[in-house]
Image (cartoon, one colour):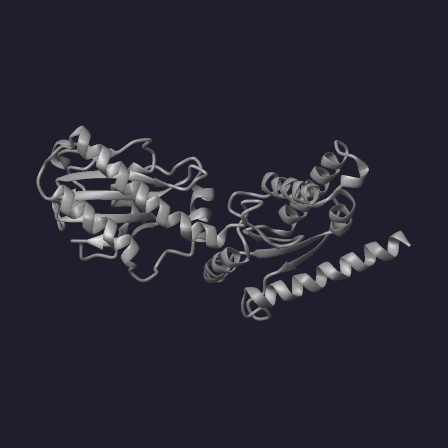
Length: 323
């Protein structure tokens, strides 16, 4: 059996998947009607909308398969993540990658698989709309076109979830998405004893940019700062815009030295940006950095509240220094 390889963008892919807050949700007819239609059109015993998490594939919609999820290391969809087109296995017993896979040798005895990757608008692949059969078969060109069309319907439904958790201007995670992600991340880090730090940022003099230069320039400033945050922090860090001029970065597995280095990179990146724009468009910010302590911070809201206070103290000290 061949274990599926991890995509090159795995960290950002997992972050995007978790930001949708769709994993482990209840069945929804808007997804189920797509898999029911696929099952009927292709006359297959099983049709799934599969989302590939870090160590499992979880089925948002499931027709004909009893399991709600299976391990990622035996998944067919894990292989399909790398495909630009339909990933098809006409006969699993004749394929060296799958002939001894436990999903082939045991229940549900997969002999045929076809999965069309499901992508976000950014191009990130979350999983597949897939067809499974207990006997070998091969898709015709008309079949392939139909599967692509059905997958496009599933992508539209997933995109509606993305719109609820992504800031439309900066394309960063919004507050709702941040709260969902931070809940999972804090719980995981507490379980495994990993360090977490929260950076809360407020842009200084942002109102002046809006008032003096107009809201279009204000939007450009927000987009520029968002891009700086993306370049500064790791793909595994959760970066969010809370609305207005407030941002947050949840940094996991950062020791004090790496967190300090990230803050220095942020300062340098903002200085480099300011050297290339008129002084009236220059960016400035205040920030509060807090270490997560599960005994002190019951949840992400408590952590945010303390980081906000720390940011405010930083802003006040900067204001007093300018007097």
